Amino acid sequence: MINKVLSSLYSWILMVVIVIVVITANSFYVVDTLDDLSALEAKLFSTNRIIGAVNKLHVALLRAESGQRGYLLTEDEAYLNEYTQTLNTFAALADEVEVSVFASDSPEQSKRVNNLLALTKEKINRMVEVVELARENNKSEALSLLKSDRGLELYNQFEKIFEEVDSSERNIQGTHLANLMKLRRDSVNTLIISSATTLLLIVTIFLLLKINTRENEKHQAELEAINEELEAKIEERTQELSVYSDELARSNRELEDFAFVASHDLQEPLRKIRAFGNRIESGYGDVIDERGKDFLARMLNAAERMSMLISDLLSFSRVSTRGKDFSEVELNTVLNSVLSDLEIAIEEKSAEITVSDMPKIRGDKSQLEQLFLNLLSNALKFQPADIVPKVQVNCAKLDPDSDSVELENILKSDEYQWIKITVEDNGIGFDQTFSEKIFAPFQRLHGRSEYKGTGIGLAVCRRIVERHNGTIAASSEPGNGAKFEIILPLDSEPFGSNNDNGDPSHDA
Image 1: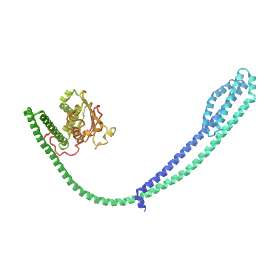
Image 2: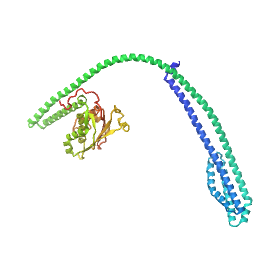
Image 3: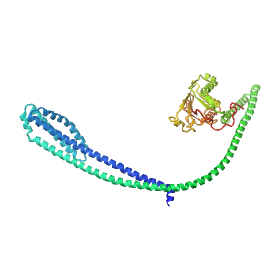
Image 4: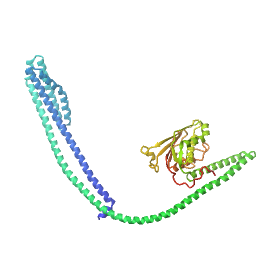
């Protein structure tokens, strides 16, 4: 029975839920207790503050009256110093009493304090009146006013209300202290119960884990026996797969050779079509009517496009099948060579091409030249007629920590150092929804009458970059140019295997 319980995922989930519930309940109780303690502490603080403020006001009133009487009896100005200082503090003391009473738990306290402050104000005004009469040499009148019953009545009323306020707050204080002690006793009891419950759960889980460990050891022994049997079967299967792999590699080589030969043989009839078409055009152009000339021109254009498609298809297939071994390549030299090849196109369009300093990487030099030639020629080709082409080629090193987002989808991103090359132009651009479509073979976004080409150049670029273990991506907006970002490792080996190291520039 225990084994079935331990082997059930739901049983473990239930136990974990119970533990979480117990711990959470204890946590909530602790938080609630702390909130209650904080609330009681706040109430005790408010009560102490009210008691202290009212007492300070009472003491200040007595000191002021003491200074007044001393001056009247002795006519010594020294008594007036303490009297004056005390009067100067009455406003602050009254504010303190008025503010502190807002937090009182007694609904009558605010009314009592207002009466107390009113009596205090009247008592102070009477003391000031007596002192001023004495200073103006009206001592008899001052003593008469001092000995009147009004001053005594004011003080008696003040003291009565003072005792009510003080007594009420001290009763509230006693209640809060009693609640505090009760909360402490309840907290201790609950803590003991929670600790015992948690300890019991821990012991139970420990025992269950111990039993589960024994069961795991038993299952482990059974698994080891099964693994030995599986290893034998895997070894046997691996030998079979090795045979299939060799067969597949041989079949791929045969398919590649067939594709090469087929493409080579397709070129020959096209050459004859073009050659005979040119002879008809030059030798019999004067005897063919306009409709025949149109048919002939269409035939020659179709043959030329077919020849270009076959050549581009061969270039696309040779990226993997006829690539050279990697070696140290100076990208500055590669770009200088490409700019030299594009010199006439650059001069015709008065293009401005800016190239930053490029590093040295391991790669296939001829394929890297083809990569940049395709990208720069596209940047010059896809331009509005009335705008001077401006192309910027920049390079930056990537930091695995700060640029982790750009490297997260790249295989072996931790094994190499990486650079990012950007090729940005001010051409016609394209809609971002076509950012993946443009890298597919024979995909065109514009008609052949607008811009020439077979639509395979960027597909070749992607295969070259992928063979160099990198990535290429495009971003653009219609009318705002295009930006190609190429991420390459500085030191890597070709992705996949080369079947032939022949000359990649060989043409059928």
